Length: 196
Image 1 (cartoon, rainbow, N blue to C red):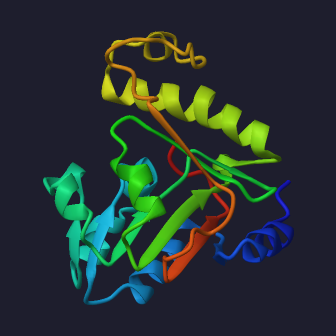
Image 2 (image 1 turned 90 degrees about the vertical axis):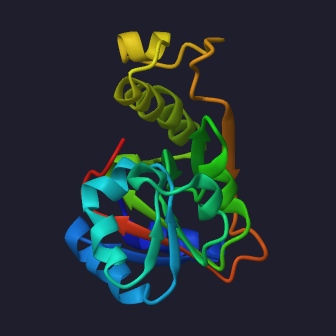
Image 3 (image 1 turned 90 degrees about the horizontal axis):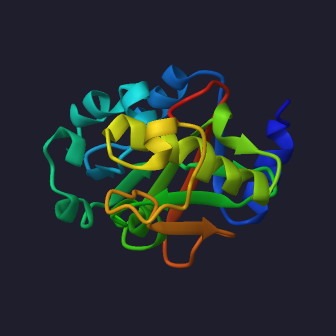
């Protein structure tokens, strides 16, 4: 069972703002109320898709998402960036694995505000468990979704640390604390499974 109060305290000590919601609908409504009349980019994220967040925010913001025809390069210049994580440790580490680097780069630098939406399925007890989850659960599921030719996509059971040209695990970013320079970095915890 996740102790959200303790997790919130841990993350706040590391410099993050934290909000917690029972459902993804509540979280989506919260983000909709916080983000208005500005430019927003989404990282490649099934969580965002599960929440149906794009049409909600696009009603009153300029929203760029390469899954909706927007350019990854245009996304670099937005005021707000929204994505998820592949693993969040209860000890405070945020872990993301990426193939191109656009998603992880935007979590590190360049936007005034960054939001991480994290479903309960992505929370692990410690760094090692969160990293294991990112490599052996999130990455194979994303490889299968993309229909690529890798051992993890074929078997769907774990990371094989393959050298396939289709490999999507090319960059690993761990946030130990909120990076300097970003005005606001918020972790939106949702007490239901979201994404991979």
